[in-house]
Image 1 (cartoon, rainbow, N blue to C red):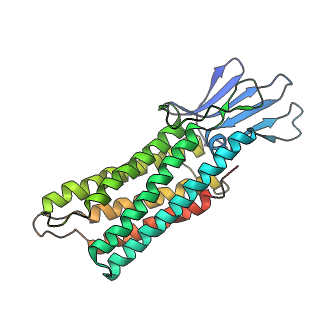
Image 2: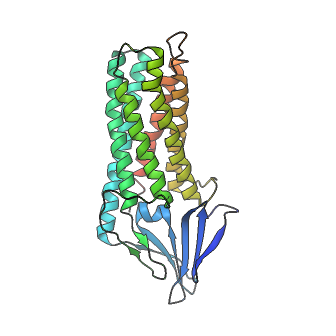
Image 3: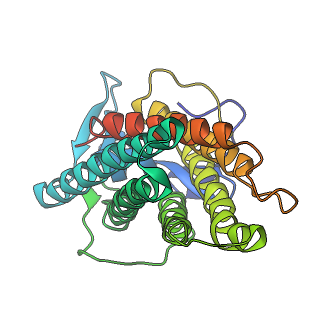
Length: 288
């Protein structure tokens, strides 16, 4: 269901479009037999489905894309789900090592870096899932399957912008994690090389989650507890907020050369990582 107060507009003679800002998240159109079809952005790219309502109103049915498209979505969804689950688990382990002061700085940094590679993989798999998602065909009760692509530029699609921002955030975090191996840095160097990329990656994650909430709610964020997609986005957005808290607490004060609050930074990372692991587990269920 769309959120209360979200605007709908005519996209054509027989099409009604529901938008979130400039992004179309839901389209409905009339069919030749008198029925109607409904396309939703997240449902199409995650499950490869289209909803069809008959003219007599006896009940809606689900039309799926062809098996080629469904195999793609299943594979990419599995890769992303496993990557975020494992990556979140490794970040949890790294934070636990830092809190227990076991393994030293290099040990926790190595675990974080390995987890970051899984986050990179999950981010790119999510982007590929959007790039190769079935597309709607106004006037028809079926989805079109685009040819396989490794890259596209479609900032007018909310799913693309959300997953691209997520992937970009994982890459920036990779810079942060790689630089964390550097030793002998001054407070200013640590803030520039380690903390600054962290503070860029966290807002990118938050933007991705905000777009995801707008997509699944078809407008301003609101509660949709019966929607698996809503839970996935909400849990991941909670993880992004906790990562931001951890990043703020990790700022190295030039006067002392120590973080603002190392314990808060580690606990924020640990709990945020648990959210991403849980989001990965839930994502495994949101498949064709």
